[in-house]
Length: 71
Image (cartoon, rainbow, N blue to C red; front, side, top):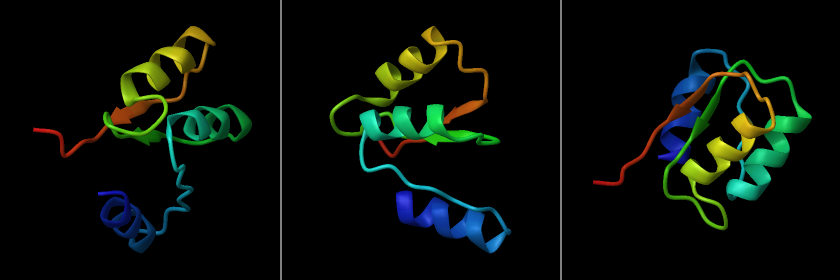
């Protein structure tokens, strides 16, 4: 999913940064001025629910979109 979504967005002209896990994703979100964060529910170290909660608890206002292949 990560590759597919990144590729689709890049083909539409978006600049895409990719995190390897939830901890890195939270760090990246706080360090950059993103227009949107797309997060998977099942990611290593800190899942998407935990990462989103941490960001919101820290006052992060950027839209966060959950995307997952979890069935």
